[in-house]
Length: 449
Image 1 (cartoon, rainbow, N blue to C red):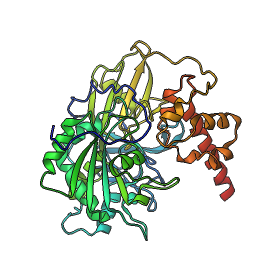
Image 2: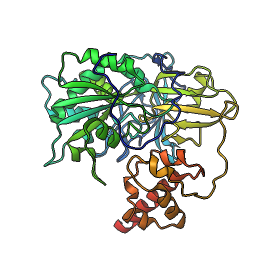
Image 3: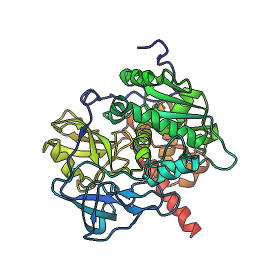
Image 4: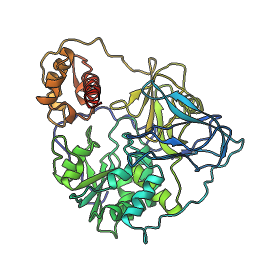
């Protein structure tokens, strides 16, 4: 390893769950086939759902825009395969609700090629043109949050940034999709970085990578050796090192204020896979229609990293990799911040970074019943933003949601799950916080109506 790649930066608190990345970290990205029917949800991002612009029985080509953005806080959807629109209706979403979707039946033998669109040339494009091109490509945060990337790049009046941080940490257990992207799509990442810097006016970019991925760090270091404005830094192995606030603290020793955003510190944080998509799509004027997904866990015969068309039903994806009948739980994303699915009919979305399967026969010990809080303080020692999860949990059980917000800063919690993981009483603290947040948001919406 190069001498300047020393993992000596991190943040206070946090935890060290088992990484469980060994089964897929060395597996190269493989192209996935098209499912018999693709289901493209119209709401795969934070913000207004896209609006379908196709009709039933219409033929479309791979990469064609099939749903348009509704306002600035929205992104379009593109056809993941050439085929026929069979239905525009409702489909199961990850939260268990039925949501608007487009059903696409690929043509037999449909190819992987995508037509060229209107390119956005780095050398001649203005910052505004780059931001518009990112929105037109339907790009959102691929690390899981699915926040529209073009919104992040639009610097508000009176604000400025000096640094872009590329998040290559991927601290969630099991997941290795970003790791493989950093090894196999290096040129796309660097080109995407240059688009980001021009769009925002940032003077420098730091690529932060966790110390368990030295090969990715070396690959990016080699590509940036003649670009002093782009640097690569290793950070210590710790969860949740990949959270925006934690990465900013580790790399720049800047703190995002309570209730604030990274831009308050002059920083924009962007996922490496998202950045690679910018570098891959913008020069060709194309939209995102597939993404890299890690499929792993007990009961999966062919664990690996797959380039999967967006809209592929989970059931089809798991059949392709050989899911055993012993699997009892399927999680979208990682086990710490991911979401257990209620149906295998849910499709792959833009924010789906991983599919992790758990089995009763795979060595997983199911947690015992919840016990009373013993005031041990472990959750306080684990919380990376110095909240009091124990007190918040007690207030949540009592329904004292206003006090959770006004006195204990509930909305500063980004739901990393460290407190739940470390709790010896097996109290599902982060689940209590999610419920409290949802109820308070609904209460606020009713007041505003």
